[in-house]
Amino acid sequence: MPEFRNIHVFDLMKYRLPWAGKVSILHRVSGLLMFILIPFVLYLFEQSITSEVSFVTFKSVLAHPIIKLVVLALIWAYLHHFCAGIRFLMLDLHKGIDKASSAKTAVAVLIISLSLTAVCAAKLFGLF
Image (tube, rainbow, N blue to C red; front, side, top):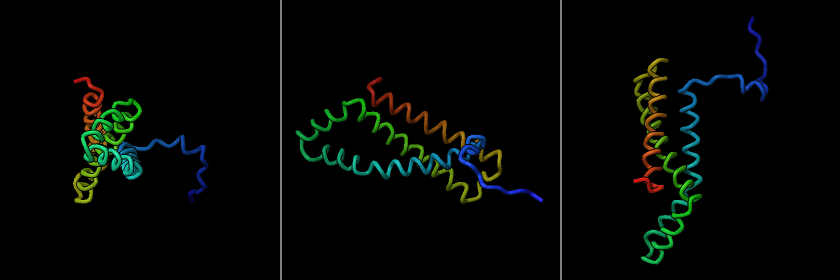
């Protein structure tokens, strides 16, 4: 007969989560991050459209490196949430639900979202 026991906090470090599980957790984290940053985005939007003077203020606020990192986190959250959302919609249509294709699509979501985030980071930090 199998023995079931409670999982201890230290046991969590021993588990190896598959790529699909990691993408699922990151999908939830990115959704939470976008929800938490709604006031920040609304502030930036309001500062950018109020007047020319406020737009200059907006540009000066956005020039700060920490604010750029916050914006980059928001960009990553949106891109990852979007790509993973498409993957989950395909899973809801019963496409790619076997283990091998699920792992491939999970890795593809990570590669696509991180590469798009890198392109946006290069543009945000003025590399091109």
